[in-house]
Image (tube, rainbow over all chains, first blue to last red; front, side):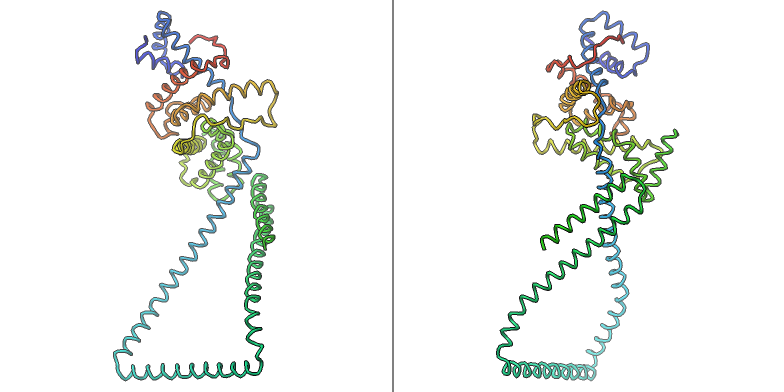
Amino acid sequence: MANERQKNWMQEALDETLPPESLHELRARLETSPEDAAQYERLRRVDRLLRSAPMERAPAALAVSIMARLAEAVSQRAGGRSSAALALTLAVLAALLLPLLIAFCWLMLNTIGSPAALGQALAGLNALLVSVIAAVDGLLASAQRFVEAYPEAPAAALAIIPISLTWLVRTARKHRSNEKQRRAESRLADTTASSENPTVQAAQVRAAESCLDGRAAERDDL
Amino acid sequence: MSTIDSVVLEWVKAALNGDQDAFAELVYMFQDAVYNLCYRMLYDSVEAEDAAQEAFLRAYLNLARYDTARSFKTWLLSIASNYCIDRLRRRRMKWLSIDDPLPNLALREDTPEPEDVTISHERSRAIQDLLRQLPPDYRAAVVLRYWYDYSYVEIADILDTTESAIKSRLFRARQMLADKMDAKDISGMTIPLLENI
């Protein structure tokens, strides 16, 4: 029975990494031990079977699928980058507005600290509230007169509300769908112009077409 | 550096600058190698296609991390093999039986002769049946050794382990496969053994 070292030699012989002197020693061993020779034969059968295995070729459409997936990933990344840019812009804006906010707070605290200034501020606020209330009162009086003159107007107004809401929602959806289609069409046009590689073209056209199909389905739903 | 390597390096640099045409060239060049690895690892043509796509996508997204001193093919295959090993481990965690039905092994349109195809197909299936019984790490070592002719050191580099670990995996894998072959008696698929060592 082969020991561990000889078993390793058998394996290394199969991988053609066994030094010549060890190979010679292994040969001698196999000639004298039928059991070891049988063991080596079993391993060699495996080795031969694996060496004879064919290489599987990639499906014809694999490259196109890869490039389509890649184009999608790249556009998603670009979307992520624009969100990051928006967040950065907002952060900068907030940082710029901070001194203004601090100045406003300082003014407010000063006003509250001085009784005369506080009285003035309260009087101004009071006057503003009075004028707002008077304006609302005037509007209500006009509305009351209008309803007295045309009693059917409230019912008509109530009927218009759901109709106008539905119209608004449909218009917004249509606008969004048109915008997406316009972007997809422009991407499709860019594709043929920007890339000379047929795989990239096919992948990008496929991505853009699937986008257009999606938009068409959305429009149908509408 | 060989001419092919320098061309590949040019494509990698161009792809890093956002040139998708250059990356498409890399896909064309290595798609068979990546697909075969995924197919041998996963045993299913649909899964292999998906894994190959994922491997290329990961390669593209991590292209900046590629060390140009290494072979691009080796780097790509290391992404694919590690992804397949993870996928096999996840599959095992989902308690999928190893006796699930045979995958789609339909013949392709560009196959040469029906008889050759049948023999090749049968042999391929017999090998796949054996391979799928190996643990993922062993399977990866066997595939990289026999289909790509990589040395122990290169396989260790791809699978991020040591040379002795790869030797051990290969030796044990061959022993396991020999035992399975005895059990299944598929010697009819082997090539007649004519040569001596």
